[in-house]
Image (cartoon, rainbow, N blue to C red; front, side):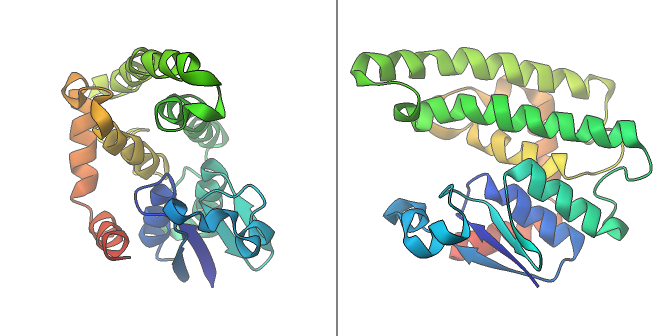
Length: 209
């Protein structure tokens, strides 16, 4: 059995949804970031980075969302959460997921935890002031991907990129960072995912945890 360590609404939501979509044999364990459970010795032993998600497998623990998502897709091929028969398409999926991890997520982090990157009140203010501009650039790029009418990130087929994008589309509503209405295709994608049974189930589980 796989064990996913998550916090409700964090980027771990993507891995949680992917596990459910895959029909995986897993359990989900909540790590309360608000009270610092990620820094407790027992969790640091499991994941020295002190973050979520972490996925415990029979061979060890995996961290980082793009890695976990790729692992879930590869270990559950019947769920067709990745283009396993097309190396370029698989690479394109991974590239998009890395873009979300290294650009989009980092932009949000400058708003949520600017102290990771800068010191002092002036530095924090400057970091936060840059966030809307960065998010607008990134989400305009994502919006353009859907210009051909595709329902999912990579076309007609649902992949692990879709719940990953879904996480950040939800984050757009936080603290007035950006107006989601500026990205109607991204908003439509989010609505499509809202309707998926696996997404509804995971959101209910995380809301009650």
